[in-house]
Length: 224
Image (cartoon, rainbow, N blue to C red; front, side):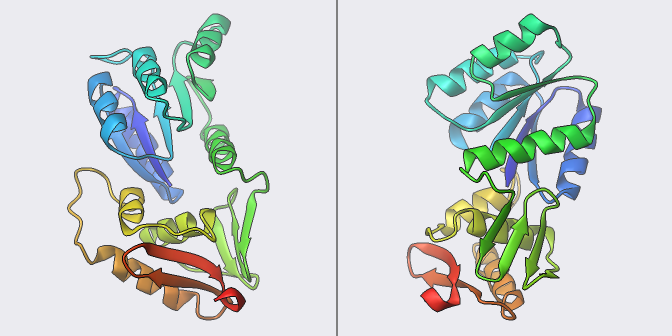
């Protein structure tokens, strides 16, 4: 899952980005409102964490523009403005959740998980495909009950395929989920990661099917 973190305090941004990446999220950082607005206009994210007091465009305006483009992506406001009216205003202009600084990381991570489940219409925190299971709270994959060892990029590939289980996921969608805008992407990189994940799933009955020219599909082996 790819998160856009919009926070002008670089020390806080870098610390929080490292924390979220350790939780197997792909994180892209933006430090001002104009940059964030442009990224939200041109790139695809699963969730945004948005400060309000930003240089350039104010965070509220960033959010108004996002919703004005009818983009339903979940947005969690994370700000020093913690008053009741601040919360009301933030939610009224389109935020899905609101947290005041200082904050506790476990609560922030729990709110992120809840927003992502809601966005993907998954009320159950455990997603399954055959013997493959994914606990979105612990962010651990298992095959027939045994933990599945994955690198961060492999984890991102399998998570997206499982969230979209039964639906085709294009190579470009996978690339958008795995890499930040400023990262150079080898055209063959997605195929390499999919191949590695496919090998690691061989002990179970969930398989990744390649649909030529369309992308990849995760489904139970007995449906292939």
